[in-house]
Image 1 (spheres, rainbow, N blue to C red):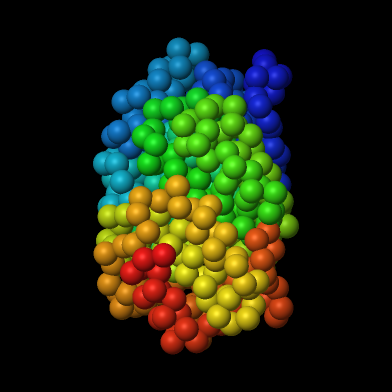
Image 2 (image 1 turned 90 degrees about the vertical axis):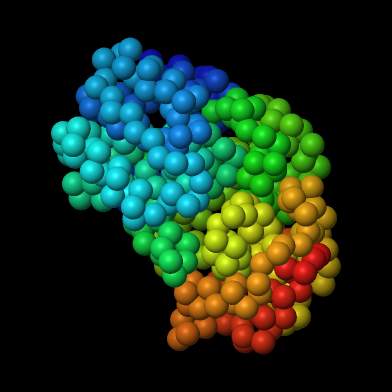
Length: 374
């Protein structure tokens, strides 16, 4: 029966991981194949389906019902929607409910939702009874393109975003692009920012494809989105396979995130991740151009590609607060944040390493400028 999902999928991408390779199935209508995927890649009688309270009643409940129908014992858990739930408190609540349900080490977590769910439920799976399998069912563009692939899980703390977490690769990922029709256009657009990032750092052709197909992608055309998601996953898969635990090359995936995460934290997570990363990419491209590392005109190309994907080109965020959070970034070395800088669209600058030291004054100017408008 597993051959059915291979035939139904627009694409199947194999991800190499230390704990074992896993497939990412991409295409419209794949959620119905979840029971087959679970039984094949994470065979467990008892399951914890985890979703937020917005996605849960729609896709989470459908997933749980489909799994119950084929004989699984399902514990269905939800948490409040939004980045504000990616906390120790939510992690504690979910793990306590799993313990109260008597779920043992032979259980599997099925994460159904967007980026917050993939990160939080993935971290629950990574830490519950020292680690249980997880199947990721991303329901947003961001989660399909980025958060569900690569094994990064985590939660936010007061000092910053994703500062507590673990590498815990899924057993399988189902990216059903038909589910994107249930999102509003703003969420679809923001999720595409990560695809723009993949193009900016790895493939000019992918970058141009997104720019030329933006209307169809934001409009949730399932086939166009399947092509975009599959291409982005392939690009990320190649990087992850070569550097799963972020010792070197994988750092390139942080382009725009050093400043983007600081902006998110300074805004108390009241702006979307995609929008924050868009501003972060523009700021980091400006830094690169000022330092003579990045080809002149790169920032302009980024702004043109991102214009239709962001809700406005300025943010009411205190630059000094964003700069304060930069000091808490995971990539800080010797008290200074480090930045991924482009050589040009499709290529990252790599001299003595994939991340670069930037003096505080240059970073301050770039952050202040981008927040005031681009």
